[in-house]
Length: 456
Image (tube, rainbow, N blue to C red):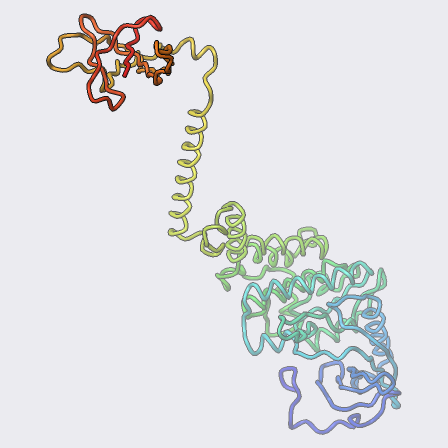
């Protein structure tokens, strides 16, 4: 195997095509320091599975079987979508122990880093969150992994969704207050790399707790963001000494684009003193959430949400929330505000004008001016007359009257009486009412004083 993948020049495997109990081994998936992983088929339930078989040279040691049993017990004791699921365990015909687990489609984080180098901060934050959620469940069950590294984090394809990180290999895990044997831990470190071991684990301390896993995750995130290991050395001992006595180079000097919040989380995870680290995976998750809320992209998203909530007129004037921060939208909002203010003032003014005045207001109002005298056409004297017209003359009133019967007993035609304008010295000219051939001078009548009666 080269770089975590199968080497085409590697000889064929004898287990391919064989049966391990009820499982039919179909092909070799990968080779690691502790053993080999195969794809197999369970004909009982028609399900594909993965089988991890311990390597021949390690299987000869009695403590290796204990390590495999520990891995099976630890992974199966914790139910989490971020920890590989263990289905079964057993031994081959020649006595090598194996573990049956879920078949994952994807690649390890180590392969991704080897191919792509440093990852984007958002992707690193997502991986860290998922790994911490898995560790939170494991630590709640009093299980400490103690061998976290990129090779033991598998990124499962969830196309079209982003990959999901799952934790593998609980082979050197610690249950409660029972520590794994030192030589097992040392074998795992030699076969892998010591760069992800916490200072207390590197020194062989017996009271390794959950904070050791947090240090290892910090080292993994450091490599994901910078593309390099936090500690290097020409030998195992040199790396251990540097882990225990020095601090890693400042993360943002190697990854200047890393957000401050995420860099602070990684650096706190990697504090040499356990008391200065996060106390639990739950605390790391909280800090990651706060770091994500402070990222430029998330701050911009939250600002757009707040602005779209504040500006209620955006949906009615045809603007979109994404454009609310533009200068054009700002001018439009100002014009809408000014127009709204003018409309409110206008409505209030009309409302006040329509209100009836109160009694106190009427008393304080000045009396209305007297109307100007009006003169009708019939009240205007001719040029030959010298009579004056009184300024305020009521309009002419028409009165119908019936004349008394004549001496001959015939009834006279009805006559029309009109109120003439009052003249100072002369009567106004009589108006002709009937079509008589000869005008008749109006005479005074006692029917109504001041009325001119015109008879035919």
